[in-house]
Image (tube, rainbow, N blue to C red; front, side):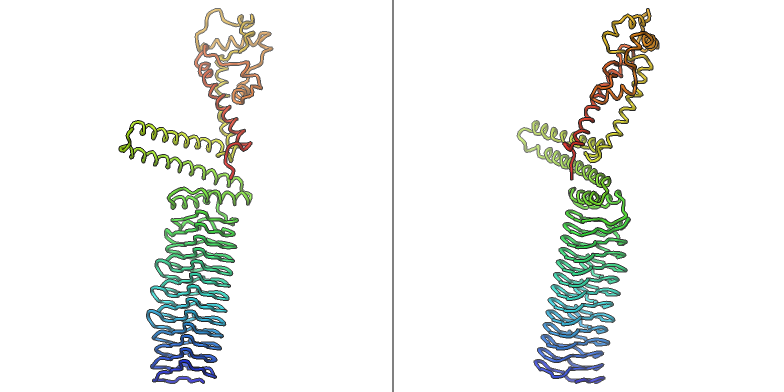
Length: 553
């Protein structure tokens, strides 16, 4: 049964009726409501028709239902609990009621639902608990309600959900607990609500979730506990507030590229993604970043390690206390991908930050202890105890700092070679000056009492720093015992002094003489520092190489 272009003044009431043929009112105008509550019919076509209200809850439509191409309702269109075996097509329809514009709660649709291509709803569109076997297509649709624009709590969609290509929602889009077998495509969509703009808590997406192109969101995108079987692609988007994705799971790629905004926040606490894909500068717009327990199996990025450390620093600046997990996670992935040096640098920064946190904790505890002294029965003893603990904290901090500078906290033992080289160069130069000034002397008692040595002395006693000390040494070197004695070498002497093996014979046979002048006196004192440095660095280096000290993450 079909009517086209009619003006109908009375109410069309078919509640509870079973129509044997489709009902079609094409480009008609009705002055009163259409009532199809509990009605059964093969199909319903209201293309281009204007009416006050459509009451069709629990409608049984065994074919398509069209509210499209100029359809207009000034009141509520109620399809709650309806069962439609065909498609629900509202393309180009206008739903002008305030409050609730289109109620499709608990609806069952055997094909697709189209709310696109000129679709406009002034009030809320309610799809709570809807079951749609096909797709939900809202391309270019205008959802203009201020509170909740599109309510899709617990919706089930057999294909994809498309909120793209000019889709606009002034209020919140709620897809909490939605199950979408296909993609969630929001490319070039505009979500203009303040607060939460797109609420996808506990959503399940069977393919990709896309927020790219000229996608815009003024409020939060909430993907908390979302399960995404494909990729999560956020690229070329404009975010005013940011992304909350605590506990999110992305099986494939999480892409964050060319995102613009002014001081946005990103919360990835306990999220897990397959691949983290980002680009240099892509996180510059992020002011607050939370990465605690954020896990990723691999990284695809051109970012260097310094920029990645800056990325972690955003997290450190956001959270109240330092959390090392984000550094360990990054280092483990870099190591698996073959970037061992970068991984070591990340873990060094972790150690630096952790040592600083321990120091700050000790400082805070010290301050609290001092503040609590007024109620202590023994304030002097309590003060001494608090100060002692703080001193130990400071010493521990500097010990860790020196360990990090010299050995990279056990992860870059080769770094100690720079310190060894500095110590050896200084020792060689100093030893050479002592030798030039003649203030080295043999240590052998046989030599020192030999006639050759005694004959080389001038007849007059020499004062300290006299240049004749070198002449005496040179004269002795020309004697038989001098030629047979171990020759002095500043290089070998420095090595023998630093390496605790005494294998080169220099330290055993030569020593600075404190009686011959200032060079010899300082050489006599400083050799103990070089020996101590050699023992400490050698022992720590051996312990690091063998794994006795130094963390292994």
